[in-house]
Length: 109
Image 1 (cartoon, rainbow, N blue to C red):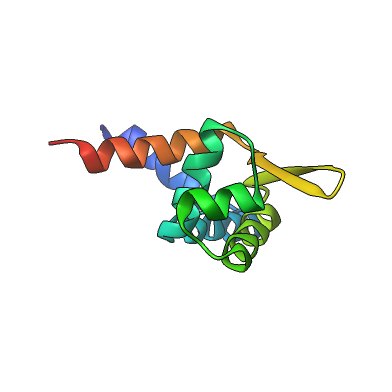
Image 2: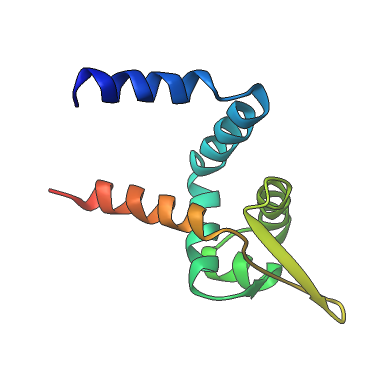
């Protein structure tokens, strides 16, 4: 990276506003929890109800619901209601790409 590129990167970082910085830090906070990573990874493969998520990941239903609420508030997952059942799916391909990059990095020798 030459001097001009480094200056450009610094200029981009300086232009980040507080709201953007907060959202980015909350996104990384979400990805810093192994249970939330498992949920996002599962939802990258299929849509699931809370009960399905809890069962597949060996969680209490209340734990799955709590983590889904956290992810939903960050717009990392979305839901739809069918009768009494709520189905969750991923809400942002960027997050799945970021998660896949992190998994690839962890598996890289």
